[in-house]
Image 1 (cartoon, rainbow, N blue to C red):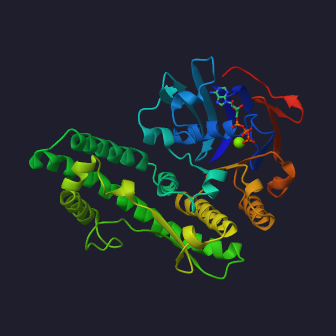
Image 2: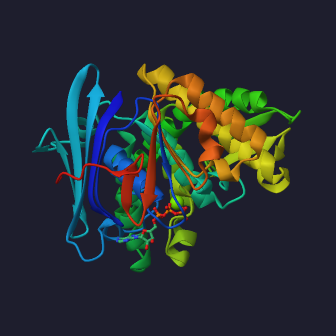
Image 3: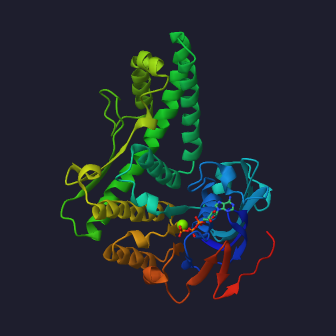
Length: 380
Ligand SMILES: Nc1ncnc2c1ncn2[C@@H]1O[C@H](COP(=O)(O)OP(=O)(O)OP(=O)(O)O)[C@@H](O)[C@H]1O
Ligand SMILES: [Mg+2]
């Protein structure tokens, strides 16, 4: 997979950008607040249809305009394809080769991207919400169908919570909701488990290679409140049954609180160093190395599963890593041969990922320029 060209119109502060990225490193340099992250966010939206950081889609549309548009030409399995996404009026619309995408599978067919941001580096220390989002992004990267599946779960959860809040519920009536939620939840469990089974050992090995910590790392996912069931081996139907039962035993409590207290939406990812919680005990450098280990493992895992490297988006990560770990990452990127977009305020931090064929961009007040010249700004 390779991104051949990118065009952005009215996306955040980027009014018009058109560029042909390097086959390897494309490096966007600029002062704070100029639009570097916006450029990566546009690419991320294009590849995942999800915002990288915005809470609402409307935030993505440039102030004073009606809609934002991002278009990319990709080389996918030897064929060129144009994918596009438009955001306007709070909704987004996806296009493949100029036609509205019939399904998400159709849209994603073979496009894969991994983003790495300073927020990710905080994920070990942060709350469970951030870790779940982190996990779910990795699951989605590996299993694109998960976008739909996790939405189904979210919808079932919302419906059940609404019912609980509406007042005392007829048990038989609630059962139907529990059944739907348990089935969707079991799907989420199975996807997350599959991802962790692939990723956990790789991340552990990568962390070891990053070095400077004698204790081994472990990355785990263990849903709470599933009773006697053996999570590692249970099949999907068994997990659905266990979740249904857990929901049933909590009906009263959930009714009083007005929300569902068991299920994938309350689970956490555990990260340990030498069997101790990394959240509680790891140093800041160790926590960041744990995330770096995970991210590199995620990239390698996708390469093994897909047969090609995903597109990598690294937003200002180098300034947050200590020099040794940054050097490790830069070496990894240049050795992997991956197509990567990096942003930085200081080009010297990412020089290790650069080569002769790198494209250096300057970003200033929403204008993206190359080697001092304003890039071609043909209309999108
Ligand atoms: N919808 C929007 N319309 C116009 N401008 C926007 C919109 N959303 C954000 N901006 C502007 O984009 C700029 C921030 O861009 P961005 O986050 O890409 O900066 P950056 O270059 O990554 O900076 P830093 O180095 O601090 O991370 C801000 O000036 C902000 O006001
Ligand atoms: Mg930024």
